[in-house]
Image (cartoon, rainbow, N blue to C red; front, side, top):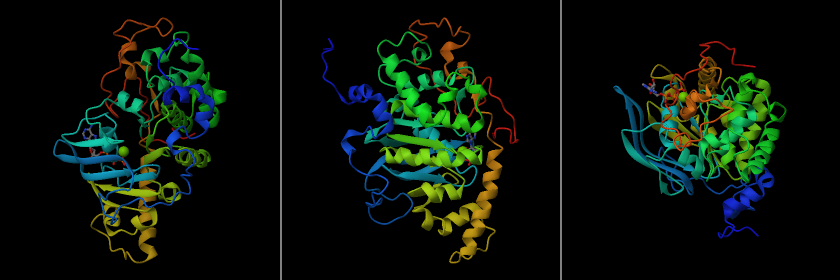
Length: 389
Ligand SMILES: Nc1ncnc2c1ncn2[C@@H]1O[C@H](COP(=O)(O)OP(=O)(O)OP(=O)(O)O)[C@@H](O)[C@H]1O
Ligand SMILES: [Mg+2]
Protein backbone atom coordinates (compact mmCIF):
# COMPACT_ATOMS: atom_id res chain seq x y z
CA UNK A 1 0.00 0.00 0.00
CA UNK A 2 1.39 3.31 -1.03
CA UNK A 3 1.73 6.00 1.63
CA UNK A 4 0.28 8.44 -0.86
CA UNK A 5 -3.18 9.43 0.30
CA UNK A 6 -4.82 10.21 -3.00
CA UNK A 7 -6.99 7.62 -4.60
CA UNK A 8 -6.13 6.12 -7.93
CA UNK A 9 -7.19 8.53 -10.60
CA UNK A 10 -7.25 8.11 -14.34
CA UNK A 11 -3.71 9.30 -14.83
CA UNK A 12 -2.45 6.80 -12.28
CA UNK A 13 -4.33 3.99 -13.86
CA UNK A 14 -2.96 4.90 -17.25
CA UNK A 15 0.50 4.95 -15.78
CA UNK A 16 0.05 1.65 -14.03
CA UNK A 17 -0.89 -0.05 -17.26
CA UNK A 18 1.53 1.78 -19.46
CA UNK A 19 2.14 -1.00 -21.89
CA UNK A 20 -1.51 -1.75 -22.34
CA UNK A 21 -2.73 1.80 -22.76
CA UNK A 22 -0.07 2.52 -25.30
CA UNK A 23 -1.67 -0.17 -27.40
CA UNK A 24 -5.28 0.48 -26.77
CA UNK A 25 -7.57 3.38 -26.21
CA UNK A 26 -6.55 4.95 -22.94
CA UNK A 27 -9.69 7.01 -22.91
CA UNK A 28 -11.73 5.04 -20.39
CA UNK A 29 -15.04 6.82 -20.78
CA UNK A 30 -15.16 6.01 -24.45
CA UNK A 31 -14.15 2.39 -24.20
CA UNK A 32 -16.22 0.17 -26.39
CA UNK A 33 -16.85 2.64 -29.21
CA UNK A 34 -15.32 1.70 -32.51
CA UNK A 35 -14.16 5.04 -33.87
CA UNK A 36 -13.25 3.56 -37.20
CA UNK A 37 -16.82 2.56 -37.98
CA UNK A 38 -18.69 5.19 -35.99
CA UNK A 39 -20.89 6.91 -38.53
CA UNK A 40 -22.71 9.43 -36.37
CA UNK A 41 -22.96 12.77 -38.16
CA UNK A 42 -20.01 15.15 -37.83
CA UNK A 43 -21.97 18.31 -38.41
CA UNK A 44 -25.03 19.81 -36.77
CA UNK A 45 -27.09 21.58 -39.38
CA UNK A 46 -25.80 22.64 -42.76
CA UNK A 47 -22.29 22.07 -44.04
CA UNK A 48 -20.60 25.43 -44.60
CA UNK A 49 -17.34 27.14 -43.65
CA UNK A 50 -17.36 27.48 -39.86
CA UNK A 51 -20.23 25.05 -39.38
CA UNK A 52 -21.04 23.62 -35.95
CA UNK A 53 -19.94 20.09 -35.12
CA UNK A 54 -21.88 17.55 -33.11
CA UNK A 55 -18.95 17.01 -30.77
CA UNK A 56 -16.16 19.57 -31.20
CA UNK A 57 -12.83 19.16 -29.41
CA UNK A 58 -11.54 22.55 -30.55
CA UNK A 59 -13.58 25.70 -31.04
CA UNK A 60 -11.84 28.79 -32.44
CA UNK A 61 -13.47 32.18 -32.74
CA UNK A 62 -12.24 35.33 -34.47
CA UNK A 63 -8.63 34.18 -34.48
CA UNK A 64 -6.49 36.65 -36.40
CA UNK A 65 -2.77 36.99 -36.93
CA UNK A 66 -1.14 39.42 -39.28
CA UNK A 67 2.47 39.76 -40.32
CA UNK A 68 3.11 43.24 -41.63
CA UNK A 69 0.20 43.85 -43.92
CA UNK A 70 -0.64 40.19 -44.50
CA UNK A 71 -3.52 38.55 -42.71
CA UNK A 72 -1.87 35.17 -42.28
CA UNK A 73 -4.80 33.87 -40.24
CA UNK A 74 -8.25 35.42 -40.35
CA UNK A 75 -10.58 32.73 -39.04
CA UNK A 76 -14.10 33.77 -38.06
CA UNK A 77 -15.16 30.45 -36.64
CA UNK A 78 -13.90 26.88 -36.72
CA UNK A 79 -14.76 23.69 -34.90
CA UNK A 80 -12.71 20.50 -35.07
CA UNK A 81 -14.72 17.29 -34.62
CA UNK A 82 -13.66 14.93 -31.84
CA UNK A 83 -12.60 11.35 -32.62
CA UNK A 84 -12.28 12.18 -36.31
CA UNK A 85 -9.38 12.73 -38.66
CA UNK A 86 -9.60 16.26 -40.05
CA UNK A 87 -7.37 17.42 -42.88
CA UNK A 88 -6.47 21.09 -43.07
CA UNK A 89 -5.62 21.87 -46.67
CA UNK A 90 -4.95 24.97 -48.70
CA UNK A 91 -2.34 26.41 -51.03
CA UNK A 92 1.11 27.46 -49.86
CA UNK A 93 0.91 30.48 -47.60
CA UNK A 94 -2.77 29.92 -46.79
CA UNK A 95 -2.05 30.17 -43.06
CA UNK A 96 -2.26 26.52 -42.06
CA UNK A 97 0.97 26.42 -40.10
CA UNK A 98 0.27 29.79 -38.54
CA UNK A 99 -3.13 28.54 -37.37
CA UNK A 100 -1.42 25.48 -35.87
CA UNK A 101 1.09 27.74 -34.15
CA UNK A 102 -1.68 29.89 -32.69
CA UNK A 103 -3.85 27.02 -31.50
CA UNK A 104 -0.95 25.22 -29.86
CA UNK A 105 0.55 28.21 -28.07
CA UNK A 106 3.63 28.61 -30.28
CA UNK A 107 2.49 32.00 -31.52
CA UNK A 108 0.23 34.76 -30.21
CA UNK A 109 -2.64 36.09 -32.29
CA UNK A 110 -3.63 39.71 -32.66
CA UNK A 111 -7.07 38.72 -31.43
CA UNK A 112 -9.33 35.78 -30.89
CA UNK A 113 -10.27 33.09 -28.43
CA UNK A 114 -10.30 29.36 -28.66
CA UNK A 115 -11.15 26.34 -26.58
CA UNK A 116 -9.87 22.83 -26.19
CA UNK A 117 -12.26 20.38 -24.56
CA UNK A 118 -14.47 23.25 -23.49
CA UNK A 119 -11.66 25.14 -21.73
CA UNK A 120 -10.44 28.52 -22.89
CA UNK A 121 -6.82 28.06 -23.83
CA UNK A 122 -5.78 31.35 -25.36
CA UNK A 123 -2.47 32.35 -23.83
CA UNK A 124 -1.80 28.85 -22.48
CA UNK A 125 1.76 27.68 -23.18
CA UNK A 126 2.48 24.83 -25.53
CA UNK A 127 3.87 22.82 -22.63
CA UNK A 128 0.71 23.17 -20.59
CA UNK A 129 -1.37 22.36 -23.63
CA UNK A 130 0.57 19.15 -24.11
CA UNK A 131 -0.22 18.23 -20.53
CA UNK A 132 -3.85 18.95 -21.25
CA UNK A 133 -3.69 16.51 -24.14
CA UNK A 134 -3.07 18.70 -27.16
CA UNK A 135 0.16 17.99 -29.03
CA UNK A 136 1.54 18.90 -32.43
CA UNK A 137 4.37 18.04 -34.75
CA UNK A 138 6.17 20.50 -36.97
CA UNK A 139 6.35 21.01 -40.70
CA UNK A 140 10.05 21.36 -40.08
CA UNK A 141 10.57 18.28 -37.98
CA UNK A 142 11.97 18.89 -34.54
CA UNK A 143 13.95 16.04 -33.16
CA UNK A 144 17.09 16.56 -31.22
CA UNK A 145 20.02 15.22 -33.14
CA UNK A 146 22.47 15.20 -30.27
CA UNK A 147 20.14 13.10 -28.17
CA UNK A 148 19.40 9.45 -28.71
CA UNK A 149 16.06 8.26 -29.95
CA UNK A 150 15.17 7.12 -26.41
CA UNK A 151 16.21 10.46 -24.95
CA UNK A 152 13.97 12.21 -27.44
CA UNK A 153 11.13 10.02 -26.23
CA UNK A 154 11.88 10.90 -22.61
CA UNK A 155 11.68 14.52 -23.57
CA UNK A 156 8.14 13.83 -24.77
CA UNK A 157 7.28 12.36 -21.40
CA UNK A 158 8.46 15.55 -19.74
CA UNK A 159 5.12 17.03 -20.65
CA UNK A 160 3.39 14.63 -18.34
CA UNK A 161 2.06 15.87 -15.04
CA UNK A 162 4.74 16.11 -12.43
CA UNK A 163 7.61 15.86 -14.87
CA UNK A 164 10.10 18.55 -15.63
CA UNK A 165 11.67 18.96 -18.98
CA UNK A 166 15.30 18.79 -17.98
CA UNK A 167 14.61 15.78 -15.83
CA UNK A 168 13.49 13.89 -18.86
CA UNK A 169 16.94 13.84 -20.31
CA UNK A 170 18.83 12.17 -17.56
CA UNK A 171 18.68 8.67 -16.30
CA UNK A 172 18.52 8.04 -12.62
CA UNK A 173 16.59 11.09 -11.49
CA UNK A 174 13.13 10.00 -12.45
CA UNK A 175 12.21 8.25 -9.26
CA UNK A 176 9.52 5.66 -9.69
CA UNK A 177 8.45 6.94 -13.07
CA UNK A 178 11.60 6.00 -14.94
CA UNK A 179 10.65 2.41 -15.60
CA UNK A 180 7.16 3.34 -16.69
CA UNK A 181 8.38 6.05 -19.02
CA UNK A 182 10.91 3.68 -20.53
CA UNK A 183 8.33 0.94 -20.94
CA UNK A 184 5.94 3.33 -22.60
CA UNK A 185 8.69 4.62 -24.90
CA UNK A 186 9.66 1.04 -25.76
CA UNK A 187 6.12 0.19 -26.79
CA UNK A 188 5.82 3.28 -28.96
CA UNK A 189 9.26 2.81 -30.51
CA UNK A 190 8.42 -0.77 -31.36
CA UNK A 191 5.16 0.31 -32.89
CA UNK A 192 6.92 2.90 -35.02
CA UNK A 193 9.70 0.42 -35.84
CA UNK A 194 12.30 2.60 -34.21
CA UNK A 195 13.12 0.17 -31.41
CA UNK A 196 16.31 -0.97 -33.07
CA UNK A 197 17.41 2.65 -33.23
CA UNK A 198 16.65 3.58 -29.66
CA UNK A 199 20.27 4.09 -28.62
CA UNK A 200 21.25 5.84 -31.84
CA UNK A 201 21.51 9.59 -32.08
CA UNK A 202 18.42 11.07 -33.70
CA UNK A 203 20.80 12.77 -36.14
CA UNK A 204 21.47 9.37 -37.69
CA UNK A 205 17.82 8.83 -38.61
CA UNK A 206 16.44 9.38 -42.08
CA UNK A 207 13.98 12.21 -42.69
CA UNK A 208 11.04 9.84 -42.57
CA UNK A 209 12.26 8.19 -39.39
CA UNK A 210 12.56 11.60 -37.78
CA UNK A 211 8.93 12.26 -38.66
CA UNK A 212 8.02 8.95 -37.05
CA UNK A 213 10.09 9.77 -33.99
CA UNK A 214 8.46 13.16 -33.67
CA UNK A 215 5.05 11.53 -33.85
CA UNK A 216 5.98 8.78 -31.40
CA UNK A 217 7.41 11.36 -29.01
CA UNK A 218 4.23 13.43 -29.11
CA UNK A 219 2.28 10.35 -28.04
CA UNK A 220 4.25 10.03 -24.81
CA UNK A 221 1.75 12.39 -23.15
CA UNK A 222 -1.16 10.20 -24.24
CA UNK A 223 -2.77 13.09 -26.04
CA UNK A 224 -6.40 13.53 -26.95
CA UNK A 225 -5.68 15.70 -29.94
CA UNK A 226 -2.71 15.13 -32.23
CA UNK A 227 -1.96 17.90 -34.71
CA UNK A 228 0.40 16.95 -37.53
CA UNK A 229 1.85 19.59 -39.84
CA UNK A 230 2.62 17.86 -43.13
CA UNK A 231 3.47 14.44 -41.72
CA UNK A 232 4.17 13.04 -45.19
CA UNK A 233 6.38 15.77 -46.61
CA UNK A 234 9.87 14.50 -47.32
CA UNK A 235 8.98 10.95 -46.35
CA UNK A 236 10.18 8.12 -48.55
CA UNK A 237 7.20 6.47 -50.29
CA UNK A 238 8.22 3.20 -48.61
CA UNK A 239 7.30 4.73 -45.27
CA UNK A 240 4.14 6.42 -46.46
CA UNK A 241 1.82 3.49 -45.90
CA UNK A 242 3.11 2.92 -42.42
CA UNK A 243 2.63 6.60 -41.59
CA UNK A 244 -0.92 6.44 -42.90
CA UNK A 245 -1.58 3.40 -40.74
CA UNK A 246 -0.14 5.14 -37.71
CA UNK A 247 -2.45 8.08 -38.22
CA UNK A 248 -5.47 5.82 -38.65
CA UNK A 249 -4.43 3.99 -35.49
CA UNK A 250 -4.51 7.21 -33.54
CA UNK A 251 -8.17 7.48 -34.37
CA UNK A 252 -8.81 3.81 -33.65
CA UNK A 253 -7.33 4.41 -30.22
CA UNK A 254 -9.74 7.25 -29.51
CA UNK A 255 -7.60 10.24 -30.40
CA UNK A 256 -8.61 13.16 -32.57
CA UNK A 257 -6.29 14.04 -35.44
CA UNK A 258 -5.91 17.33 -37.25
CA UNK A 259 -3.33 17.25 -40.00
CA UNK A 260 -2.05 19.59 -42.68
CA UNK A 261 -1.41 17.85 -45.95
CA UNK A 262 -0.89 18.67 -49.59
CA UNK A 263 -1.22 15.10 -50.82
CA UNK A 264 -4.85 14.76 -51.88
CA UNK A 265 -4.58 10.99 -52.11
CA UNK A 266 -3.67 10.82 -48.49
CA UNK A 267 -6.43 13.25 -47.58
CA UNK A 268 -8.98 11.20 -49.46
CA UNK A 269 -7.81 7.96 -47.89
CA UNK A 270 -7.74 8.89 -44.26
CA UNK A 271 -9.63 12.12 -43.62
CA UNK A 272 -13.20 12.06 -42.33
CA UNK A 273 -13.44 15.79 -42.71
CA UNK A 274 -11.59 18.45 -44.68
CA UNK A 275 -11.17 22.13 -43.81
CA UNK A 276 -9.86 24.37 -46.57
CA UNK A 277 -7.94 27.57 -45.91
CA UNK A 278 -7.02 30.27 -48.36
CA UNK A 279 -5.50 33.64 -47.56
CA UNK A 280 -6.02 33.06 -43.86
CA UNK A 281 -9.72 32.26 -44.09
CA UNK A 282 -11.72 29.07 -43.91
CA UNK A 283 -13.19 28.91 -47.41
CA UNK A 284 -14.74 25.45 -47.37
CA UNK A 285 -15.40 22.42 -45.20
CA UNK A 286 -16.84 19.02 -45.89
CA UNK A 287 -16.21 15.34 -46.46
CA UNK A 288 -13.16 14.77 -48.71
CA UNK A 289 -15.07 13.87 -51.86
CA UNK A 290 -17.43 16.82 -51.74
CA UNK A 291 -14.94 19.41 -50.69
CA UNK A 292 -12.77 18.86 -53.74
CA UNK A 293 -15.69 19.73 -55.98
CA UNK A 294 -16.37 22.92 -54.06
CA UNK A 295 -15.90 25.96 -56.31
CA UNK A 296 -14.26 27.85 -53.44
CA UNK A 297 -11.61 25.15 -53.18
CA UNK A 298 -10.88 25.06 -56.85
CA UNK A 299 -10.69 28.85 -56.77
CA UNK A 300 -8.31 28.79 -53.87
CA UNK A 301 -5.91 26.46 -55.64
CA UNK A 302 -6.21 27.59 -59.20
CA UNK A 303 -6.64 31.28 -58.56
CA UNK A 304 -8.76 33.44 -60.78
CA UNK A 305 -7.32 32.17 -64.05
CA UNK A 306 -9.11 28.92 -64.51
CA UNK A 307 -11.99 27.71 -66.56
CA UNK A 308 -12.70 24.48 -64.81
CA UNK A 309 -16.03 22.80 -65.25
CA UNK A 310 -16.82 22.03 -61.67
CA UNK A 311 -19.41 19.49 -62.60
CA UNK A 312 -17.05 17.26 -64.43
CA UNK A 313 -14.21 15.10 -63.30
CA UNK A 314 -11.70 16.90 -65.50
CA UNK A 315 -11.94 19.77 -63.06
CA UNK A 316 -11.01 17.46 -60.22
CA UNK A 317 -8.14 16.05 -62.25
CA UNK A 318 -6.86 19.51 -62.97
CA UNK A 319 -7.07 20.35 -59.30
CA UNK A 320 -5.21 17.21 -58.40
CA UNK A 321 -2.49 18.03 -60.91
CA UNK A 322 -2.06 21.41 -59.27
CA UNK A 323 -1.99 19.83 -55.86
CA UNK A 324 0.59 17.29 -56.94
CA UNK A 325 2.85 20.00 -58.29
CA UNK A 326 2.29 21.83 -55.04
CA UNK A 327 3.31 18.78 -53.08
CA UNK A 328 6.55 18.47 -54.98
CA UNK A 329 7.40 22.05 -54.22
CA UNK A 330 6.79 21.37 -50.57
CA UNK A 331 9.22 18.48 -50.31
CA UNK A 332 12.06 20.88 -51.02
CA UNK A 333 11.13 23.10 -48.12
CA UNK A 334 11.79 20.37 -45.59
CA UNK A 335 14.99 20.73 -43.69
CA UNK A 336 17.00 17.88 -42.29
CA UNK A 337 14.82 17.86 -39.20
CA UNK A 338 17.66 18.26 -36.80
CA UNK A 339 17.85 20.87 -34.14
CA UNK A 340 20.32 21.45 -31.40
CA UNK A 341 19.10 20.46 -27.99
CA UNK A 342 19.95 23.92 -26.62
CA UNK A 343 17.57 25.56 -29.03
CA UNK A 344 14.60 23.70 -27.57
CA UNK A 345 15.84 23.43 -24.02
CA UNK A 346 17.43 26.83 -23.58
CA UNK A 347 18.24 26.03 -19.96
CA UNK A 348 20.72 23.47 -21.16
CA UNK A 349 22.71 25.88 -23.25
CA UNK A 350 26.33 25.17 -22.60
CA UNK A 351 25.48 22.57 -19.97
CA UNK A 352 27.32 19.31 -19.91
CA UNK A 353 24.64 16.75 -20.66
CA UNK A 354 26.30 14.24 -18.35
CA UNK A 355 26.25 16.67 -15.43
CA UNK A 356 23.03 18.54 -15.80
CA UNK A 357 22.30 21.77 -14.06
CA UNK A 358 19.50 20.85 -11.70
CA UNK A 359 19.09 24.26 -10.12
CA UNK A 360 15.48 25.49 -9.91
CA UNK A 361 16.16 27.87 -12.81
CA UNK A 362 17.36 25.05 -15.00
CA UNK A 363 14.37 22.92 -14.19
CA UNK A 364 11.94 25.58 -15.23
CA UNK A 365 10.00 25.19 -18.42
CA UNK A 366 11.56 26.79 -21.43
CA UNK A 367 10.10 30.01 -22.66
CA UNK A 368 8.66 30.82 -26.03
CA UNK A 369 9.72 28.63 -28.85
CA UNK A 370 9.68 30.57 -32.07
CA UNK A 371 7.96 28.40 -34.63
CA UNK A 372 9.88 27.67 -37.77
CA UNK A 373 12.45 30.27 -36.91
CA UNK A 374 16.05 29.61 -37.74
CA UNK A 375 17.35 27.46 -34.91
CA UNK A 376 20.93 27.20 -33.90
CA UNK A 377 22.33 24.00 -35.23
CA UNK A 378 19.47 23.69 -37.69
CA UNK A 379 20.64 22.13 -40.87
CA UNK A 380 19.20 24.01 -43.82
CA UNK A 381 19.81 22.02 -46.96
CA UNK A 382 17.63 24.32 -49.01
CA UNK A 383 15.59 23.03 -51.86
CA UNK A 384 17.05 19.60 -52.26
CA UNK A 385 15.72 16.14 -51.88
CA UNK A 386 18.37 15.05 -49.49
CA UNK A 387 15.90 14.89 -46.64
CA UNK A 388 14.34 11.92 -48.35
CA UNK A 389 15.69 8.60 -47.36
N1 LIG B 1 7.00 34.48 -38.82
C1 LIG B 1 6.48 35.05 -39.91
N2 LIG B 1 6.81 36.29 -40.28
C2 LIG B 1 6.26 36.88 -41.38
N3 LIG B 1 5.36 36.29 -42.16
C3 LIG B 1 4.98 35.03 -41.84
C4 LIG B 1 5.52 34.35 -40.71
N4 LIG B 1 4.96 33.12 -40.65
C5 LIG B 1 4.12 33.04 -41.70
N5 LIG B 1 4.14 34.18 -42.41
C6 LIG B 1 3.31 34.49 -43.60
O1 LIG B 1 1.98 34.14 -43.27
C7 LIG B 1 1.35 33.51 -44.36
C8 LIG B 1 0.88 32.13 -43.96
O2 LIG B 1 2.00 31.29 -43.77
P1 LIG B 1 1.88 29.80 -43.28
O3 LIG B 1 3.26 29.29 -43.08
O4 LIG B 1 0.97 29.74 -42.13
O5 LIG B 1 1.20 29.11 -44.54
P2 LIG B 1 0.93 27.56 -44.81
O6 LIG B 1 -0.49 27.45 -45.20
O7 LIG B 1 1.41 26.73 -43.69
O8 LIG B 1 1.83 27.33 -46.12
P3 LIG B 1 2.65 26.00 -46.59
O9 LIG B 1 1.63 25.12 -47.22
O10 LIG B 1 3.61 26.56 -47.59
O11 LIG B 1 3.31 25.43 -45.40
C9 LIG B 1 2.36 33.52 -45.49
O12 LIG B 1 2.13 34.65 -46.28
C10 LIG B 1 3.67 33.61 -44.77
O13 LIG B 1 4.64 34.21 -45.59
MG1 LIG C 1 2.81 25.26 -43.50
